[in-house]
Length: 311
Length: 221
Image (cartoon, rainbow over all chains, first blue to last red):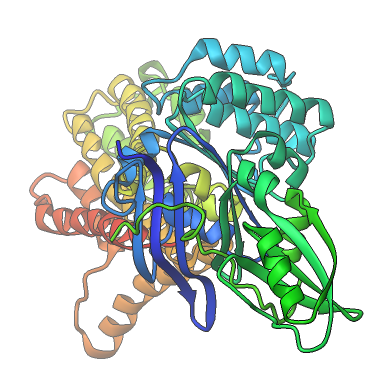
């Protein structure tokens, strides 16, 4: 297997006039937890559907576990656990029946893990799925994906309805059982604080394009929000500037590296730099995605990831 | 069921004095009519119901993405589903015919009784064609009620069109209803078994899952 569990290059999915995914370059390192973040309608689920061969790309390149999702779909699915955003399963079945049904598809299914997760997540096994709460439905979907012992877990919004204790338990399961064994977790979520707890990498998508792909560690240690006041400041200065926005007389720049140098250059242009502060994931996300007419270009995965293009 | 109860009372001891081959023939005919009349209606209904509850139903339930992310080809799901439905229909027909044989062998002791077994063929083919059609239309429309409605419309049209064409132009179009005439073979010596027609309708029943597979393999979620 290559270093990358998932690679996309110039991936596009257009539905008539709608550009759901629009030139996405994604690189998910094997053995990592990759937080795939974006607002509603940003293109996350469309991307996931292309990764799983549920839908065909309009154009572009996709590789999952070094395989093509269209021609090697079954081989990918044998090694990939997936929970969908909808969390819809057969209503008339009980979790015990759903587990038995799903188990039959997977040669590497671990009954031991299944029992352990059922116990740890406190899943009611004998109740029909339709009568379960959203949280319990989510838990059932998670166990169906987790007990496969898959090389790759693709979890699309895996935490709706889960109480904090279960979220904590889930994160622990992912860390203990999956990351410890070198498996890859691709986590699409709006729960930024949870993603921040576990992710190694994050990718932020907006309007079908990747705005940012970076190590979380780099975000915490290098990324800065530079606030400056002044006349005629550039809306966009250099490649390391991920976004710039003007509000209430101040310019705010999200800078990926060398924030001090960037601030010094702004001062040379007559700006008064009022603040240089570190950013958490939530702040980065909001700075990059909230603008109607963004000056954001992000890094598109090129600058920070430092991995050559796949094609 | 009513017929079973009725004929179960017609034991040889209960047969009219001096009842001969005519009596056995009457019982056989009664069974034949029961099988091909209400029996075919039950199978049309069963075909519609089973056809609408297969892969197409996954759309309505929103479970198709769950199913299609299991490590099996889409072809596998289409054919497993189809074979399950066809197997169910076969079982239904086999039970009905077996019940008939069990009764008739005891009651009528007719040499023709075993031929009634052949009734399984047209009944099964009628059920299978309706089932395959409904399964295909439901998958195509991605909706259970649309699938049922359109299928019922098509079945009615397919039944009425040959009748109308024959009445107007005296042209014989192939009709699924013609298959029911095979039941005459079951009770009438000298009538030929309509093997070609049966084979033709079997191929039609098989063609629908093939088209469903072609469509389903290209479906995007």
